Length: 147
View 1: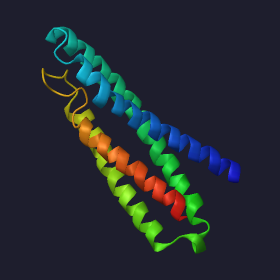
View 2: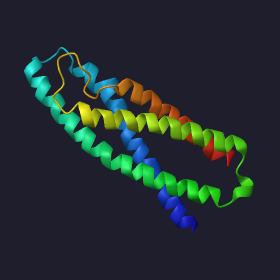
View 3: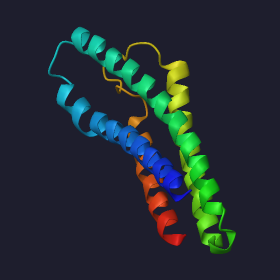
View 4: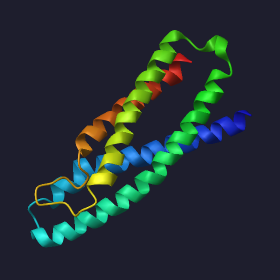
């Protein structure tokens, strides 16, 4: 059972690292490096391709994170004597932050399927999503050491 919990936790962490890491790359490196250096038409096509690939990858990761996160909580709550009230509070905060993170993704998929306009972010609200991702990781660290 511990091996299954460890593999599940690894899949969960890897999914989060890939999603938040790719978002960090887009926000901190790619967007600033590309802006204003190429003709708008060529960047529009390039950004549309990145957006399409990012949203496809993010959808798969979102599903993995939801499933593996639920399984992680199941394994953590099996030993209910060790679960403190503070742990439950941080779990609630993490779930609320994840809901915001996933909502931004879903709204982008529903309403931002067109190629980005000049001056628009590659992934709309990516800076907010990145900060939510960092806060989710912080909550995960608290959950790990409060249990």
